Image (tube, rainbow, N blue to C red; front, side):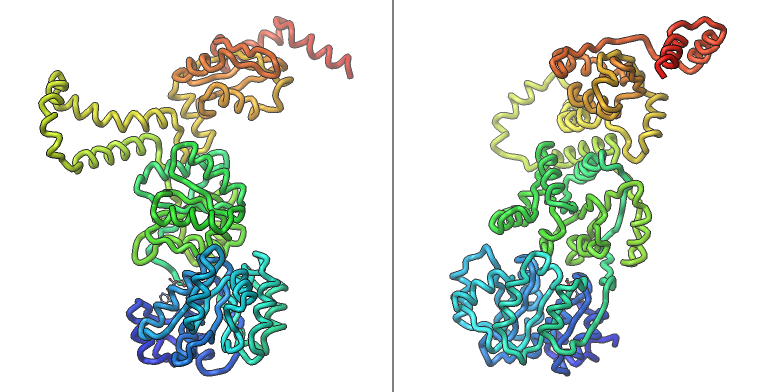
Length: 564
Ligand code: AMP
């Protein structure tokens, strides 16, 4: 079926959804709507967000509710407050032609007394989280004995979140002859059990992966090692000062750590994850909605149903474990006709996952380029200059103008402009002066550094006996020297000392910062040494040794032979 007219919806409803911009039914709507309108049937829909499932159950629900009968006739259960609000918003939109329809969202963390008062006035449809609904039942604030329809939305997620008991208790309270419509992205045994226990011969529909393609989202990826992921993310944020973004992480810990790091580096960031209480989550969401937070770092579960308009970027700090989550994450941007970017920061070994994602969700991904330090500095200074150009002039400043002009009289127009621009430029230049091009892999970068940047060689009294490997050595240098690992070149490590190359431009900084460093109670000595012997010198050295010129090398070998 290709049109909504063929599905059996009423004329006023057809007009309402047409006004909402729905042109033709999605596969789940085409299958579910006629069935739910005509047959008294239970339903199991294997579908996730983005398939149009809310309208698949919502449109029939609005049509079937008896508007003259102001009692709870339909119950929709959803895992999170955000999803409850989103469903309620959509159901309200579907009933725009019917002002008498009363739909109430009830969820934890909000004022229960207010919810009880509204329930007392009488509502037709309740959209609830299981925990809060159970509380209301216990307080005898809601009666479910006249419920004709129960919708379990995102059933797998509700069970994942530990709402098993609540769901059982709630369903026990509803009449046996009600109809149950269950939607779930996956079908784990617990969801099967619910469908077996509470439903009879449900009509089954599966539309996994058939998401509504949103042409306003540009899907992109970059290939980056985990050690440089945060840096790459910051580059995208710096490159687009007006960005308003959501970053998805796999675990609570990752999202907290990333948000902390971003805050430490001066970004307006915060985290949203399951370790927060409902009221803490609400506070974070409120600040995000008001744009007091520019980047919200969230886990998949906590971000379910986030409905904030104007999100410009969705960053996937890693590819989701379940590829089906990708569309759900990406769907937070590109809303209401606005353009959005969904960008995966992919591990270089995960190219096959992008190809699999392209096949399963039928999306084409583009490889993005990570902004370079130079590009960011250029963009930021232009941005600043534009702000300067458009700044509002103040009459009150007129009195001070002669003094200001006098103060600046030695500077030409160009000099004033240059200095003003430098105010913004220098801040970013300091941050990005030595920033490597993250689009190149490390080998390419070190090659180009060998070619371009002048290097110095240093001796340090840290060797193999002190550290486990060169990585650990490098991190000691970076941490105490306050330099970036990319400024370090070749490292030659010996038993109790090491020689290494470092870019000349940061050599003094390293020396200064290492003046008072001690490790395990031992003072660390850092001295400049002779430049590294190049390969030709090394070959000559080896030849000399063959002729019997060398000394230490053969001794060492002999010793080793003796020992074994
Ligand atoms: P859902 O999967 O129910 O979360 O829906 C995803 C988004 O698609 C929501 O913003 C809906 O308003 C929108 N939507 C649902 N059905 C249609 C349709 N037939 N045509 C266009 N947009 C739709």
